[in-house]
Length: 154
Length: 299
Image (cartoon, rainbow over all chains, first blue to last red; front, top):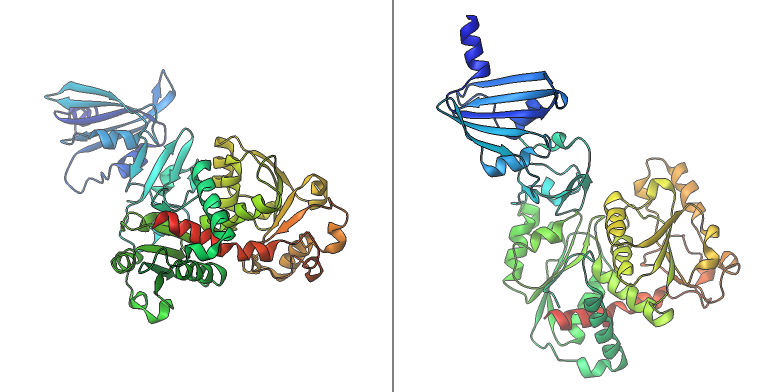
C-alpha cells in the first residue's frame, strides 16, 4: 500500500460520516453501538489516542457510505458526550452535528439486572431513561452510572 | 384514579387518599357495597406463591359482588408450555374486567401494562414493588398513628423487600421522617434511594434499632430472607440482630405501633402479639377493605 492510498482512507472520504472528538478509548464501542462491523463492505477507519488540543487525546471514526441518523447520534452521546459528527458528501462536510443526550434509548442497551423482565423471552424492547449521570431501566428501575458500554446489546 | 397501579413512584398523594377514604367508607358499612360490582370478573395471575394478597383480592371482588378467573398453578397452565407472560396476560384480559399480577421478574407489571387495556394491579414484581400492600399499610398507619408528622422506622431486608420500596416512596408524599434500619448488606437499593433523594425525602440509615427507637411512632418490620444469604451462620447472625420482643419494646415509646407485611418467621417474638404495640394482624385484615376500595375505583 502506498502512502497516498493510506492517507486517502484515513483522512478523506467521498461520502459517509466522520465522528470526531470521541472520548479516547471509546472508538470500538462507538462502532459496536452503531452496529458497524465492516461486514456490509463499508470502509471503516479508526484512529485511537490521537493528540487533541481540546481534550489531550481523542479517538476518530470514519465510515464510508453511511450517514448516521439523529437517533444514532443521540445514543452516541452516552459514551462519547463530546463527539462531533460530520456528514461528508463529495469529499466536503455537508452537515455538522453535535451529539445531544436523548431522553431515552430504546432497544440499544440490555439491563444489567438479571431479574429484570427484559432479560427473558418476552416480546419487549429494553428502554432506558437517560439521567444526568447515567441511565435507568424503565421496567425494573435499575440505575447504571458506570460502564454503560458493557450494556450494549449487539 | 389511573387505570393501572404498577408502582408507588409518582403516585400522587391525592390518589392515595382517595383509596384510603373509600376504604374507610367501606369499612364503616361493608354491607352497603355488596353487589355493587355484580358480574365483574377479576383475572388473577399469580406466578409466585401468595396467601394474603391473593385471598384478600378474591375476598374483595367477591364482597363487591364480582368473581375471579384464576390462572391457578403455573405448572397446570399454558405457561408450562412456554407461553410468554405478555400472551397469557393479553388472553386473560379478554376474559376479565381487570387483572392482578404477581410475578418473580422485576418490571413484569410495567411490561404487561403495555399489552393490556383493562385495569392492572401489580401485586408484586420480584424485588421491585408491591403498591397495593402500601395502600393497606398507609390505611393502617392512618388508623393507628396518623399520617401527619409521622416518624417511622423500617427495619429488616430493605434491599429485596418490595413492600419497603413501595412504602418508602409513598411515605415521602406524606412528608414522613423515615429511619431505615438494616445491616449494610441489606440496605435500600440505589434506585429507591435515588427516588427518595429526588423527592426530597427525610430519611436516615441506621444499623441498630436502639439508636432510633425512642423517636418512632411506628416500627415496620420485614422478614430477613434466609435464601438471600449464601451462609447459614451469616444469616443467623444478621437475623438475630433484627429480632424484636416485648422486653425490647418496653424500653421504647408506650404508643409505638409495630407493623409487618407478614409472613413473619421469627423477627417478631410471639409475646409481642398480645401487647398494644402489635397491629400487624389488623394490618392484614385491612387488605380486604383497601382492595375493595381500589377495585371499586378502578373498575
